[in-house]
Length: 548
Length: 42
Image 1 (cartoon, rainbow over the protein chains, first blue to last red):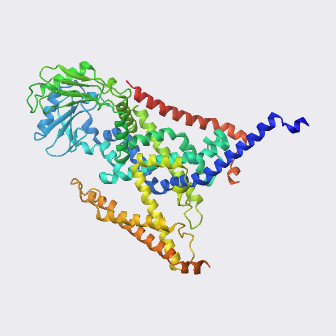
Image 2: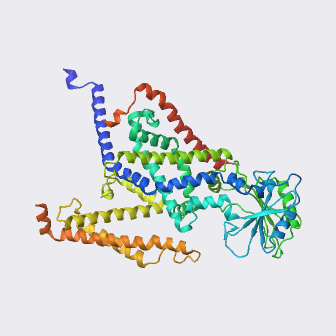
Image 3: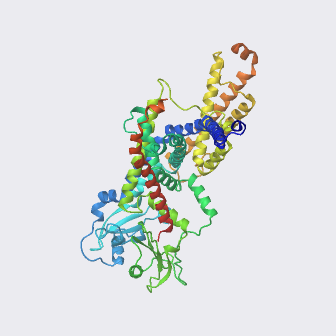
Protein backbone atom coordinates (compact mmCIF):
# COMPACT_ATOMS: atom_id res chain seq x y z
CA UNK A 1 0.00 0.00 0.00
CA UNK A 2 2.71 2.35 1.05
CA UNK A 3 4.42 1.74 -2.29
CA UNK A 4 1.33 2.97 -4.14
CA UNK A 5 0.99 6.18 -2.12
CA UNK A 6 4.66 7.16 -2.36
CA UNK A 7 6.33 5.78 -5.44
CA UNK A 8 9.98 4.77 -5.00
CA UNK A 9 12.51 7.50 -5.79
CA UNK A 10 13.73 5.58 -8.82
CA UNK A 11 10.28 5.87 -10.43
CA UNK A 12 10.10 9.62 -9.85
CA UNK A 13 13.54 9.98 -11.37
CA UNK A 14 12.43 7.86 -14.33
CA UNK A 15 9.31 9.93 -14.92
CA UNK A 16 11.16 13.24 -14.69
CA UNK A 17 13.80 11.88 -17.05
CA UNK A 18 11.02 11.00 -19.48
CA UNK A 19 9.58 14.49 -19.20
CA UNK A 20 12.98 16.07 -19.70
CA UNK A 21 13.65 13.84 -22.69
CA UNK A 22 10.25 14.75 -24.17
CA UNK A 23 11.03 18.44 -23.68
CA UNK A 24 14.42 18.00 -25.29
CA UNK A 25 12.80 16.20 -28.24
CA UNK A 26 10.30 19.05 -28.56
CA UNK A 27 13.16 21.55 -28.60
CA UNK A 28 14.98 19.49 -31.21
CA UNK A 29 11.80 19.26 -33.29
CA UNK A 30 11.42 23.02 -33.22
CA UNK A 31 15.03 23.52 -34.24
CA UNK A 32 14.57 20.93 -36.96
CA UNK A 33 11.43 22.66 -38.22
CA UNK A 34 12.69 26.24 -38.13
CA UNK A 35 16.48 26.35 -38.10
CA UNK A 36 17.33 23.47 -40.35
CA UNK A 37 15.51 24.66 -43.52
CA UNK A 38 17.04 28.14 -43.20
CA UNK A 39 20.57 26.87 -42.67
CA UNK A 40 20.19 24.17 -45.31
CA UNK A 41 19.02 26.77 -47.81
CA UNK A 42 22.02 28.99 -46.99
CA UNK A 43 24.36 26.01 -47.30
CA UNK A 44 22.80 25.02 -50.62
CA UNK A 45 22.83 28.54 -52.09
CA UNK A 46 26.51 28.84 -51.15
CA UNK A 47 27.18 25.68 -53.12
CA UNK A 48 25.19 26.66 -56.19
CA UNK A 49 26.07 30.35 -56.38
CA UNK A 50 29.71 30.62 -55.34
CA UNK A 51 31.30 27.17 -55.18
CA UNK A 52 32.53 27.48 -58.81
CA UNK A 53 34.61 30.44 -57.65
CA UNK A 54 35.97 28.27 -54.83
CA UNK A 55 37.36 25.91 -57.49
CA UNK A 56 39.15 28.86 -59.08
CA UNK A 57 40.54 29.98 -55.69
CA UNK A 58 41.76 26.44 -55.09
CA UNK A 59 43.38 26.11 -58.52
CA UNK A 60 45.25 29.42 -58.50
CA UNK A 61 45.90 29.06 -54.77
CA UNK A 62 47.79 25.81 -55.32
CA UNK A 63 49.80 27.36 -58.16
CA UNK A 64 50.53 30.37 -55.93
CA UNK A 65 51.79 28.10 -53.16
CA UNK A 66 54.48 26.87 -55.53
CA UNK A 67 55.36 30.27 -57.04
CA UNK A 68 59.07 30.24 -56.01
CA UNK A 69 59.55 26.95 -57.87
CA UNK A 70 57.57 28.29 -60.86
CA UNK A 71 59.78 31.40 -60.91
CA UNK A 72 62.86 29.19 -60.82
CA UNK A 73 61.54 27.38 -63.90
CA UNK A 74 60.57 30.57 -65.74
CA UNK A 75 63.59 32.72 -64.89
CA UNK A 76 66.19 30.09 -64.03
CA UNK A 77 68.74 31.52 -66.47
CA UNK A 78 68.46 34.99 -64.89
CA UNK A 79 68.58 33.65 -61.37
CA UNK A 80 71.58 31.35 -61.52
CA UNK A 81 74.92 32.89 -60.54
CA UNK A 82 78.48 31.80 -61.21
CA UNK A 83 80.56 30.11 -58.48
CA UNK A 84 82.97 32.29 -56.52
CA UNK A 85 83.09 35.09 -53.95
CA UNK A 86 80.62 37.97 -54.23
CA UNK A 87 81.65 41.46 -55.36
CA UNK A 88 80.50 44.42 -53.15
CA UNK A 89 76.80 45.29 -53.34
CA UNK A 90 77.59 48.81 -54.58
CA UNK A 91 79.32 47.31 -57.63
CA UNK A 92 76.31 45.09 -58.32
CA UNK A 93 73.98 48.08 -58.13
CA UNK A 94 76.29 50.04 -60.45
CA UNK A 95 75.85 47.29 -63.08
CA UNK A 96 72.08 47.55 -62.81
CA UNK A 97 72.28 51.34 -63.07
CA UNK A 98 74.51 51.05 -66.13
CA UNK A 99 71.89 48.78 -67.75
CA UNK A 100 69.07 51.20 -66.91
CA UNK A 101 70.63 54.64 -66.35
CA UNK A 102 67.27 56.47 -66.57
CA UNK A 103 65.69 54.52 -63.69
CA UNK A 104 66.06 55.15 -59.95
CA UNK A 105 67.16 52.33 -57.63
CA UNK A 106 64.45 51.54 -55.07
CA UNK A 107 65.91 48.65 -53.07
CA UNK A 108 68.33 45.74 -53.20
CA UNK A 109 67.87 42.11 -52.12
CA UNK A 110 71.28 40.40 -52.11
CA UNK A 111 71.28 36.96 -53.75
CA UNK A 112 73.13 35.40 -50.82
CA UNK A 113 70.21 36.30 -48.54
CA UNK A 114 67.56 34.62 -50.73
CA UNK A 115 66.23 31.11 -49.96
CA UNK A 116 67.91 29.42 -52.94
CA UNK A 117 71.37 30.84 -52.01
CA UNK A 118 74.19 30.38 -52.90
CA UNK A 119 73.02 29.80 -56.48
CA UNK A 120 70.84 32.84 -56.91
CA UNK A 121 71.41 36.33 -58.30
CA UNK A 122 70.92 39.62 -56.50
CA UNK A 123 67.69 41.51 -57.28
CA UNK A 124 68.09 45.25 -57.75
CA UNK A 125 64.56 46.66 -57.64
CA UNK A 126 64.40 49.69 -59.92
CA UNK A 127 61.74 52.34 -60.25
CA UNK A 128 61.02 53.58 -63.80
CA UNK A 129 59.70 57.15 -64.00
CA UNK A 130 55.98 57.57 -63.17
CA UNK A 131 53.75 54.93 -61.61
CA UNK A 132 52.19 54.58 -58.17
CA UNK A 133 53.51 53.26 -54.91
CA UNK A 134 51.66 50.42 -53.16
CA UNK A 135 52.72 48.87 -49.84
CA UNK A 136 55.96 50.87 -50.02
CA UNK A 137 56.92 49.47 -53.45
CA UNK A 138 56.46 51.12 -56.85
CA UNK A 139 53.71 49.31 -58.80
CA UNK A 140 55.81 49.50 -62.00
CA UNK A 141 59.01 48.25 -60.30
CA UNK A 142 61.41 46.14 -62.35
CA UNK A 143 63.81 43.60 -60.85
CA UNK A 144 67.24 43.63 -62.49
CA UNK A 145 69.06 40.36 -61.78
CA UNK A 146 72.78 40.82 -61.09
CA UNK A 147 75.31 38.00 -60.78
CA UNK A 148 76.96 38.42 -57.36
CA UNK A 149 80.20 36.80 -58.56
CA UNK A 150 80.81 38.68 -61.79
CA UNK A 151 78.81 41.80 -60.90
CA UNK A 152 77.16 41.61 -64.31
CA UNK A 153 73.46 42.41 -64.96
CA UNK A 154 71.87 39.23 -66.32
CA UNK A 155 68.45 40.55 -67.31
CA UNK A 156 65.26 42.05 -65.93
CA UNK A 157 61.67 41.13 -65.13
CA UNK A 158 58.85 43.47 -64.12
CA UNK A 159 58.01 42.71 -60.47
CA UNK A 160 54.31 42.50 -61.43
CA UNK A 161 55.23 39.69 -63.87
CA UNK A 162 56.90 37.54 -61.22
CA UNK A 163 54.83 34.39 -60.65
CA UNK A 164 53.92 35.31 -57.08
CA UNK A 165 52.28 38.56 -58.17
CA UNK A 166 50.62 37.14 -61.30
CA UNK A 167 49.14 34.19 -59.39
CA UNK A 168 48.09 36.36 -56.46
CA UNK A 169 46.17 38.52 -58.88
CA UNK A 170 44.63 35.48 -60.63
CA UNK A 171 43.68 34.08 -57.21
CA UNK A 172 41.94 37.23 -56.05
CA UNK A 173 40.55 38.86 -59.21
CA UNK A 174 41.60 36.89 -62.33
CA UNK A 175 43.77 39.95 -63.16
CA UNK A 176 40.55 41.85 -64.02
CA UNK A 177 41.15 44.54 -61.41
CA UNK A 178 39.84 45.59 -58.01
CA UNK A 179 36.17 45.73 -59.08
CA UNK A 180 36.07 41.96 -59.46
CA UNK A 181 37.51 41.30 -56.03
CA UNK A 182 34.07 41.32 -54.34
CA UNK A 183 33.35 38.09 -56.22
CA UNK A 184 36.21 36.20 -54.60
CA UNK A 185 35.40 37.83 -51.29
CA UNK A 186 31.81 36.65 -51.69
CA UNK A 187 33.00 33.10 -52.40
CA UNK A 188 35.27 33.12 -49.35
CA UNK A 189 32.53 34.63 -47.14
CA UNK A 190 29.94 32.11 -48.27
CA UNK A 191 32.48 29.32 -47.89
CA UNK A 192 32.93 30.37 -44.26
CA UNK A 193 29.17 30.39 -43.71
CA UNK A 194 28.89 27.01 -45.48
CA UNK A 195 31.46 25.52 -43.10
CA UNK A 196 29.41 26.71 -40.13
CA UNK A 197 26.02 25.71 -41.54
CA UNK A 198 27.49 22.39 -42.67
CA UNK A 199 28.64 21.72 -39.14
CA UNK A 200 25.11 22.38 -37.88
CA UNK A 201 23.58 20.09 -40.50
CA UNK A 202 26.02 17.31 -39.59
CA UNK A 203 25.52 17.66 -35.81
CA UNK A 204 22.50 15.29 -35.48
CA UNK A 205 24.71 12.60 -37.02
CA UNK A 206 27.10 12.97 -34.10
CA UNK A 207 24.20 12.49 -31.67
CA UNK A 208 22.94 9.40 -33.49
CA UNK A 209 26.20 7.70 -34.40
CA UNK A 210 28.72 9.02 -31.89
CA UNK A 211 32.31 9.31 -33.08
CA UNK A 212 31.42 7.06 -36.03
CA UNK A 213 29.85 10.21 -37.52
CA UNK A 214 33.38 11.44 -38.24
CA UNK A 215 34.15 8.47 -40.46
CA UNK A 216 33.08 7.69 -44.00
CA UNK A 217 31.45 4.32 -44.56
CA UNK A 218 33.41 2.60 -47.27
CA UNK A 219 30.63 0.37 -48.50
CA UNK A 220 28.10 3.09 -49.17
CA UNK A 221 27.35 4.02 -52.76
CA UNK A 222 25.71 6.90 -54.63
CA UNK A 223 24.46 10.02 -52.88
CA UNK A 224 25.07 8.63 -49.41
CA UNK A 225 28.66 7.80 -50.29
CA UNK A 226 29.22 11.38 -51.49
CA UNK A 227 27.54 12.72 -48.38
CA UNK A 228 29.82 10.67 -46.13
CA UNK A 229 32.91 11.87 -48.01
CA UNK A 230 31.64 15.48 -47.98
CA UNK A 231 31.14 15.28 -44.22
CA UNK A 232 34.38 13.40 -43.61
CA UNK A 233 36.55 15.91 -45.48
CA UNK A 234 34.63 18.86 -44.03
CA UNK A 235 35.24 17.67 -40.48
CA UNK A 236 38.77 16.37 -40.90
CA UNK A 237 39.86 19.74 -42.34
CA UNK A 238 37.39 22.00 -40.50
CA UNK A 239 39.77 24.09 -38.40
CA UNK A 240 42.54 24.41 -41.02
CA UNK A 241 39.87 25.49 -43.54
CA UNK A 242 38.46 28.04 -41.09
CA UNK A 243 41.97 29.39 -40.49
CA UNK A 244 42.65 29.52 -44.23
CA UNK A 245 39.43 31.30 -45.14
CA UNK A 246 39.63 33.76 -42.24
CA UNK A 247 43.23 34.72 -43.05
CA UNK A 248 42.20 35.10 -46.70
CA UNK A 249 39.25 37.32 -45.77
CA UNK A 250 41.53 39.75 -43.91
CA UNK A 251 42.87 40.86 -47.34
CA UNK A 252 39.47 41.63 -48.82
CA UNK A 253 37.84 45.02 -49.19
CA UNK A 254 34.69 44.35 -47.12
CA UNK A 255 35.51 41.73 -44.51
CA UNK A 256 39.13 42.94 -44.47
CA UNK A 257 38.08 46.44 -43.41
CA UNK A 258 35.93 44.90 -40.65
CA UNK A 259 39.01 43.02 -39.48
CA UNK A 260 40.91 46.31 -39.45
CA UNK A 261 38.08 47.94 -37.46
CA UNK A 262 38.09 45.11 -34.93
CA UNK A 263 41.86 45.29 -34.71
CA UNK A 264 41.72 49.04 -34.18
CA UNK A 265 39.49 48.46 -31.13
CA UNK A 266 42.41 46.64 -29.50
CA UNK A 267 44.55 49.58 -30.50
CA UNK A 268 47.80 47.89 -31.47
CA UNK A 269 50.72 50.20 -32.39
CA UNK A 270 51.52 50.44 -36.13
CA UNK A 271 53.85 47.67 -37.35
CA UNK A 272 57.38 48.26 -36.11
CA UNK A 273 59.64 50.52 -38.18
CA UNK A 274 62.97 52.25 -37.74
CA UNK A 275 63.56 55.99 -37.70
CA UNK A 276 65.84 56.87 -40.63
CA UNK A 277 66.09 60.59 -39.89
CA UNK A 278 69.60 62.07 -39.88
CA UNK A 279 69.93 65.67 -38.71
CA UNK A 280 71.07 68.12 -41.39
CA UNK A 281 70.93 65.57 -44.23
CA UNK A 282 70.34 66.80 -47.78
CA UNK A 283 67.92 64.89 -50.04
CA UNK A 284 69.27 63.33 -53.23
CA UNK A 285 70.78 60.17 -54.66
CA UNK A 286 73.03 58.69 -51.98
CA UNK A 287 76.60 57.53 -52.40
CA UNK A 288 76.39 53.76 -53.04
CA UNK A 289 79.39 53.21 -50.76
CA UNK A 290 76.80 53.60 -48.00
CA UNK A 291 75.17 50.38 -49.23
CA UNK A 292 78.36 48.43 -48.52
CA UNK A 293 78.54 49.94 -45.03
CA UNK A 294 74.89 49.09 -44.42
CA UNK A 295 75.59 45.57 -45.67
CA UNK A 296 78.49 45.17 -43.22
CA UNK A 297 76.32 46.45 -40.34
CA UNK A 298 73.48 44.06 -41.31
CA UNK A 299 75.91 41.13 -41.38
CA UNK A 300 77.21 42.07 -37.92
CA UNK A 301 73.68 42.26 -36.49
CA UNK A 302 72.82 38.97 -38.20
CA UNK A 303 69.44 39.92 -39.72
CA UNK A 304 67.39 36.88 -40.76
CA UNK A 305 67.35 36.26 -44.53
CA UNK A 306 66.15 37.49 -46.96
CA UNK A 307 67.27 41.07 -46.34
CA UNK A 308 66.19 44.16 -48.26
CA UNK A 309 68.20 47.39 -48.37
CA UNK A 310 66.03 50.42 -49.09
CA UNK A 311 67.84 53.27 -50.84
CA UNK A 312 67.28 56.56 -48.96
CA UNK A 313 66.13 59.43 -51.16
CA UNK A 314 65.76 62.01 -48.39
CA UNK A 315 69.41 61.90 -47.33
CA UNK A 316 68.43 59.81 -44.30
CA UNK A 317 69.79 56.50 -43.06
CA UNK A 318 69.78 53.24 -45.04
CA UNK A 319 66.89 51.09 -43.91
CA UNK A 320 67.78 47.41 -43.80
CA UNK A 321 64.86 45.09 -43.12
CA UNK A 322 64.60 41.37 -42.75
CA UNK A 323 61.83 39.92 -44.91
CA UNK A 324 61.96 36.64 -43.05
CA UNK A 325 59.17 34.30 -44.14
CA UNK A 326 60.02 31.24 -42.10
CA UNK A 327 59.08 30.27 -38.57
CA UNK A 328 60.29 31.61 -36.17
CA UNK A 329 59.70 34.91 -37.95
CA UNK A 330 62.40 37.45 -37.05
CA UNK A 331 61.69 40.56 -39.06
CA UNK A 332 64.22 42.79 -37.33
CA UNK A 333 65.17 46.12 -38.92
CA UNK A 334 68.08 48.50 -38.62
CA UNK A 335 68.78 52.03 -39.87
CA UNK A 336 72.41 52.65 -40.85
CA UNK A 337 74.16 55.96 -41.39
CA UNK A 338 75.66 55.53 -44.87
CA UNK A 339 78.60 57.85 -44.19
CA UNK A 340 79.76 56.39 -40.88
CA UNK A 341 78.33 52.86 -41.07
CA UNK A 342 76.84 53.34 -37.60
CA UNK A 343 73.48 51.84 -36.67
CA UNK A 344 71.27 54.81 -35.75
CA UNK A 345 68.09 52.91 -34.92
CA UNK A 346 66.93 49.31 -34.68
CA UNK A 347 63.69 47.41 -34.27
CA UNK A 348 63.52 43.98 -32.69
CA UNK A 349 60.62 41.85 -34.01
CA UNK A 350 60.26 40.30 -30.54
CA UNK A 351 58.86 43.67 -29.45
CA UNK A 352 56.18 43.60 -32.17
CA UNK A 353 52.57 43.66 -30.89
CA UNK A 354 51.02 40.18 -30.87
CA UNK A 355 48.21 41.28 -33.18
CA UNK A 356 50.70 42.47 -35.80
CA UNK A 357 52.55 39.17 -35.40
CA UNK A 358 49.26 37.34 -35.89
CA UNK A 359 48.55 39.32 -39.08
CA UNK A 360 52.02 38.69 -40.49
CA UNK A 361 52.04 35.02 -39.47
CA UNK A 362 48.52 34.51 -40.84
CA UNK A 363 49.56 36.05 -44.18
CA UNK A 364 52.70 33.91 -44.34
CA UNK A 365 50.72 30.77 -43.53
CA UNK A 366 48.03 31.57 -46.11
CA UNK A 367 50.80 32.20 -48.65
CA UNK A 368 52.25 28.73 -47.87
CA UNK A 369 55.54 30.17 -46.62
CA UNK A 370 55.66 29.87 -42.84
CA UNK A 371 57.13 26.37 -42.53
CA UNK A 372 58.86 26.15 -45.90
CA UNK A 373 58.08 23.31 -48.26
CA UNK A 374 56.02 21.62 -45.51
CA UNK A 375 53.52 24.50 -45.68
CA UNK A 376 53.45 24.26 -49.47
CA UNK A 377 52.50 20.58 -49.20
CA UNK A 378 49.98 21.17 -46.41
CA UNK A 379 48.27 23.97 -48.33
CA UNK A 380 48.16 21.86 -51.48
CA UNK A 381 46.50 18.98 -49.62
CA UNK A 382 44.14 21.41 -47.89
CA UNK A 383 43.17 23.06 -51.19
CA UNK A 384 42.64 19.70 -52.90
CA UNK A 385 40.54 18.63 -49.90
CA UNK A 386 38.36 21.72 -50.31
CA UNK A 387 37.92 21.01 -54.03
CA UNK A 388 37.00 17.37 -53.30
CA UNK A 389 34.56 18.37 -50.56
CA UNK A 390 32.81 20.85 -52.88
CA UNK A 391 32.77 18.28 -55.70
CA UNK A 392 31.17 15.68 -53.41
CA UNK A 393 28.66 18.34 -52.36
CA UNK A 394 27.71 18.85 -56.00
CA UNK A 395 27.44 15.09 -56.55
CA UNK A 396 25.13 14.75 -53.53
CA UNK A 397 22.86 17.41 -54.96
CA UNK A 398 23.03 15.98 -58.50
CA UNK A 399 21.98 12.51 -57.33
CA UNK A 400 19.26 13.86 -55.04
CA UNK A 401 17.71 16.05 -57.73
CA UNK A 402 14.21 14.92 -58.75
CA UNK A 403 13.65 14.49 -62.51
CA UNK A 404 12.98 17.91 -64.01
CA UNK A 405 13.52 19.72 -60.70
CA UNK A 406 16.28 21.51 -58.87
CA UNK A 407 16.10 19.55 -55.64
CA UNK A 408 16.73 22.81 -53.81
CA UNK A 409 15.74 23.28 -50.18
CA UNK A 410 12.56 25.40 -49.91
CA UNK A 411 12.98 29.20 -50.27
CA UNK A 412 13.45 31.26 -47.13
CA UNK A 413 9.97 32.82 -47.05
CA UNK A 414 9.00 34.49 -43.79
CA UNK A 415 12.23 33.30 -42.21
CA UNK A 416 12.79 36.50 -40.24
CA UNK A 417 9.48 35.94 -38.46
CA UNK A 418 10.10 32.25 -37.82
CA UNK A 419 13.80 32.23 -36.90
CA UNK A 420 14.73 32.24 -33.22
CA UNK A 421 16.23 35.47 -31.88
CA UNK A 422 19.65 33.83 -31.34
CA UNK A 423 19.90 32.95 -35.03
CA UNK A 424 18.88 36.46 -36.06
CA UNK A 425 21.63 37.86 -33.82
CA UNK A 426 24.19 35.48 -35.34
CA UNK A 427 23.03 36.47 -38.85
CA UNK A 428 23.24 40.17 -37.96
CA UNK A 429 26.78 39.75 -36.62
CA UNK A 430 27.84 37.74 -39.67
CA UNK A 431 26.23 40.34 -41.96
CA UNK A 432 28.38 43.00 -40.31
CA UNK A 433 31.53 40.87 -40.47
CA UNK A 434 30.89 39.71 -44.05
CA UNK A 435 29.25 42.71 -45.77
CA UNK A 436 29.72 41.37 -49.30
CA UNK A 437 27.84 38.21 -48.40
CA UNK A 438 25.11 40.25 -46.71
CA UNK A 439 24.62 42.34 -49.86
CA UNK A 440 24.69 39.28 -52.14
CA UNK A 441 22.21 37.42 -49.96
CA UNK A 442 19.91 40.45 -49.87
CA UNK A 443 20.08 40.67 -53.67
CA UNK A 444 19.36 36.96 -53.93
CA UNK A 445 16.34 37.22 -51.63
CA UNK A 446 15.03 40.11 -53.74
CA UNK A 447 15.44 38.05 -56.92
CA UNK A 448 13.65 35.12 -55.30
CA UNK A 449 10.86 37.36 -54.13
CA UNK A 450 10.64 38.98 -57.58
CA UNK A 451 10.32 35.53 -59.13
CA UNK A 452 7.52 34.52 -56.76
CA UNK A 453 5.67 37.80 -57.53
CA UNK A 454 6.06 37.04 -61.22
CA UNK A 455 4.51 33.59 -60.67
CA UNK A 456 1.75 35.11 -58.52
CA UNK A 457 0.93 37.50 -61.34
CA UNK A 458 1.06 34.68 -63.90
CA UNK A 459 -1.37 32.65 -61.77
CA UNK A 460 -3.74 35.62 -61.69
CA UNK A 461 -3.48 36.17 -65.45
CA UNK A 462 -4.37 32.54 -66.06
CA UNK A 463 -7.20 32.70 -63.56
CA UNK A 464 -5.58 30.13 -61.24
CA UNK A 465 -5.75 30.32 -57.46
CA UNK A 466 -2.24 30.88 -56.20
CA UNK A 467 -0.41 29.50 -53.17
CA UNK A 468 1.69 32.62 -53.39
CA UNK A 469 -1.11 35.09 -52.54
CA UNK A 470 0.42 37.15 -49.71
CA UNK A 471 -0.97 36.69 -46.22
CA UNK A 472 -0.24 40.32 -45.38
CA UNK A 473 -0.60 42.24 -48.65
CA UNK A 474 0.07 45.64 -47.04
CA UNK A 475 3.51 44.68 -45.79
CA UNK A 476 4.24 42.83 -49.03
CA UNK A 477 3.36 45.97 -51.02
CA UNK A 478 5.66 48.10 -48.85
CA UNK A 479 8.49 45.62 -49.48
CA UNK A 480 7.88 45.75 -53.24
CA UNK A 481 7.84 49.56 -53.19
CA UNK A 482 11.11 49.71 -51.23
CA UNK A 483 12.77 47.30 -53.68
CA UNK A 484 11.59 49.41 -56.64
CA UNK A 485 12.94 52.60 -55.02
CA UNK A 486 16.27 50.88 -54.28
CA UNK A 487 16.45 49.82 -57.93
CA UNK A 488 15.77 53.38 -59.07
CA UNK A 489 18.48 54.68 -56.76
CA UNK A 490 20.94 52.15 -58.16
CA UNK A 491 20.20 53.28 -61.72
CA UNK A 492 20.19 57.03 -61.12
CA UNK A 493 22.54 57.35 -58.17
CA UNK A 494 26.33 57.41 -58.22
CA UNK A 495 27.76 54.17 -59.56
CA UNK A 496 30.48 52.18 -57.90
CA UNK A 497 33.84 53.19 -59.34
CA UNK A 498 32.57 56.45 -60.92
CA UNK A 499 35.18 58.48 -59.09
CA UNK A 500 38.00 56.03 -59.68
CA UNK A 501 40.11 57.58 -62.43
CA UNK A 502 42.55 54.68 -62.42
CA UNK A 503 40.00 52.24 -63.85
CA UNK A 504 40.46 51.21 -67.45
CA UNK A 505 37.64 50.57 -69.92
CA UNK A 506 37.15 47.01 -68.67
CA UNK A 507 37.21 48.12 -65.03
CA UNK A 508 34.60 50.78 -65.78
CA UNK A 509 32.35 48.29 -67.55
CA UNK A 510 32.59 45.92 -64.59
CA UNK A 511 31.88 48.77 -62.16
CA UNK A 512 28.87 49.79 -64.23
CA UNK A 513 27.67 46.18 -64.41
CA UNK A 514 27.54 46.01 -60.61
CA UNK A 515 25.07 48.85 -60.34
CA UNK A 516 22.90 49.63 -63.38
CA UNK A 517 21.67 46.19 -64.54
CA UNK A 518 21.14 45.18 -60.92
CA UNK A 519 19.15 48.38 -60.43
CA UNK A 520 17.00 47.51 -63.44
CA UNK A 521 16.35 44.04 -62.00
CA UNK A 522 15.43 45.51 -58.61
CA UNK A 523 13.11 48.08 -60.20
CA UNK A 524 11.46 45.39 -62.32
CA UNK A 525 11.08 43.05 -59.30
CA UNK A 526 9.51 45.85 -57.25
CA UNK A 527 7.11 46.91 -60.01
CA UNK A 528 6.07 43.33 -60.80
CA UNK A 529 5.53 42.83 -57.06
CA UNK A 530 3.32 45.92 -56.75
CA UNK A 531 1.31 44.90 -59.81
CA UNK A 532 0.92 41.32 -58.61
CA UNK A 533 -0.04 42.25 -55.06
CA UNK A 534 -2.55 44.92 -56.05
CA UNK A 535 -4.07 42.77 -58.78
CA UNK A 536 -4.36 39.66 -56.64
CA UNK A 537 -5.71 41.41 -53.54
CA UNK A 538 -7.35 44.53 -54.99
CA UNK A 539 -10.13 42.66 -56.76
CA UNK A 540 -11.71 40.52 -54.11
CA UNK A 541 -14.58 39.51 -56.43
CA UNK A 542 -12.15 37.90 -58.86
CA UNK A 543 -10.40 36.10 -56.04
CA UNK A 544 -13.63 34.78 -54.63
CA UNK A 545 -14.64 33.58 -58.04
CA UNK A 546 -11.37 31.76 -58.54
CA UNK A 547 -11.21 30.19 -55.12
CA UNK A 548 -14.89 29.26 -55.06
CA UNK B 1 14.32 5.03 -42.42
CA UNK B 2 16.65 5.49 -45.35
CA UNK B 3 19.32 6.85 -42.97
CA UNK B 4 19.35 3.58 -41.08
CA UNK B 5 19.92 1.44 -44.18
CA UNK B 6 23.49 2.59 -44.62
CA UNK B 7 24.46 2.00 -40.98
CA UNK B 8 27.11 -0.62 -40.58
CA UNK B 9 27.30 -3.17 -37.77
CA UNK B 10 28.83 -2.11 -34.45
CA UNK B 11 32.06 -3.96 -35.32
CA UNK B 12 32.57 -1.73 -38.38
CA UNK B 13 31.91 1.44 -36.40
CA UNK B 14 34.42 0.53 -33.74
CA UNK B 15 37.08 -0.14 -36.33
CA UNK B 16 36.65 2.99 -38.43
CA UNK B 17 35.57 5.63 -35.97
CA UNK B 18 38.70 6.28 -33.90
CA UNK B 19 41.00 7.15 -36.85
CA UNK B 20 38.44 9.57 -38.32
CA UNK B 21 37.86 11.21 -34.97
CA UNK B 22 41.61 11.41 -34.39
CA UNK B 23 42.12 13.04 -37.77
CA UNK B 24 39.70 15.80 -36.78
CA UNK B 25 41.45 16.18 -33.41
CA UNK B 26 44.89 16.22 -35.04
CA UNK B 27 44.10 18.85 -37.67
CA UNK B 28 42.32 20.99 -35.08
CA UNK B 29 45.25 20.73 -32.66
CA UNK B 30 47.70 21.54 -35.47
CA UNK B 31 45.71 24.67 -36.41
CA UNK B 32 45.52 25.89 -32.84
CA UNK B 33 49.21 25.15 -32.35
CA UNK B 34 50.06 27.12 -35.52
CA UNK B 35 48.15 30.15 -34.25
CA UNK B 36 49.80 29.86 -30.84
CA UNK B 37 53.24 29.57 -32.47
CA UNK B 38 52.59 32.62 -34.64
CA UNK B 39 51.46 34.76 -31.72
CA UNK B 40 54.19 33.59 -29.36
CA UNK B 41 56.76 33.19 -32.16
CA UNK B 42 60.24 34.62 -31.60
